[in-house]
Image (cartoon, rainbow, N blue to C red; front, side, top):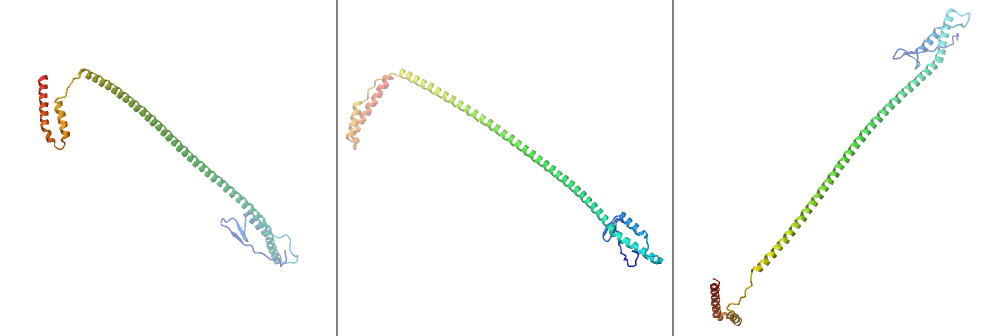
Length: 244
């Protein structure tokens, strides 16, 4: 390490946005690792390269050793931060996954509760609608039964009224029939039969015979007709005189 052939490595440091984490060749290092690396770089080497070496040579050797030690310590200290960051990233990832799972579970629970609430509301509305329809159906059935009872009562009433009318009409008919027979009997008893004789029967027979014989010459029977009319008038006068 003290020879002049040792090479130095350039290490570039950077500052992140928070001014706390430095960057070594693209790898982020924590403040603790950086302090340890600085401490190793500031420690002087315990052994020298040669007794005959000049102070300048010792100084150069010390600088080279420091650079070499720093170069060798750099790769050796690079693994732990990477592993630490991997664990932190893993823990952060697991924590984020846990949070996401919790959020998903909460969201699913909220969705489930909302769905249950909506289902309960829909079921309640359906039950209420079914109950209202059942009540309407029951009311309609009751109204129909009441209307049917009223119609049956009216039918029975009209049948009874019709039967009573028929009975009264039959009674009136029988009564009128009896009254008619009684009146006819009384009339027959009060009316006496009379013996009547034909008036001018001989002339009536002669006229009929004349008309039969002289259908085309009825004027030949005019004298008989006049005589018959005179006989009728004389009979009327006699009847009026007798029953005057």
